[in-house]
Length: 315
Image 1 (cartoon, helix red, strand yellow):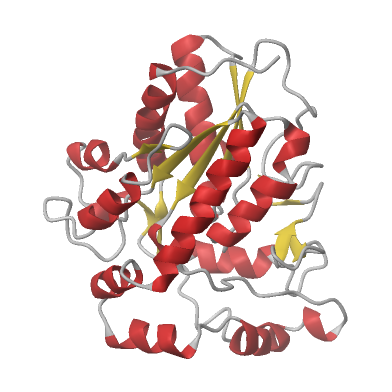
Image 2 (cartoon, rainbow, N blue to C red):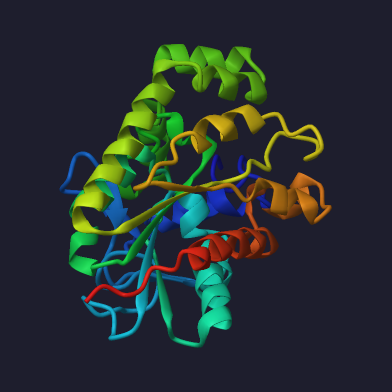
């Protein structure tokens, strides 16, 4: 009843997460990770409805260990905004970026990998860069940074096997026991508006920790000779319009992270210039993840930044 009555039918993302976790199905898209820093990971070679996970354990078509000669490989790391759980594969941000770049420079020149996992934060994204990316030999890494990535606390439900885990009641118990915020965060989220909460988050130790993680990611990629681009995801939830966008100061703080080894791209103004109200960029009325139109606008801004100082394929 909690799943089928308590969750609005329009909220495709919540329904997706319940079915994707394999509850009560026996063919999940996600599983507990052997790496405790990750918590969960995609199940290699799994498929559910319009989502396919390749043998490397990320969404999309199969890819070789190394890109083909002359091909620039870009890996996009992020959370559900990158993964695109409610979107067909071709409408996700990585796919939109690939089509935009190849339209500008010729078909097949760019290969964009979608390494997003729903619920990941900056700590988990750094772990992906450290442990998963070396085998894929990317030329460029794009971190698609969402404002709630500063919440460096677990945002995923850790899964267990066994018959009891297949019950909806078990999922609910797991949610109550494991998908919890620390007491201070929980209280703040209940007492503040979302705008005030985000500003508090970025004035706290949470952001300071996140900042250090991003800089550590930049250092790791610099040592490997990989170009690193931080893309700030404009927030489209909980705001009435872009004219008085309440998070410009947070965007400015993130932009100050830019350095020779860390490029920062902010597509906010381009998205605002399209003239639509923020909720028009939602997947649907119950799911504020960005839709295809928003992803294509953001991809165009990222593609222009990449092409201004184009990185060629590594030898």
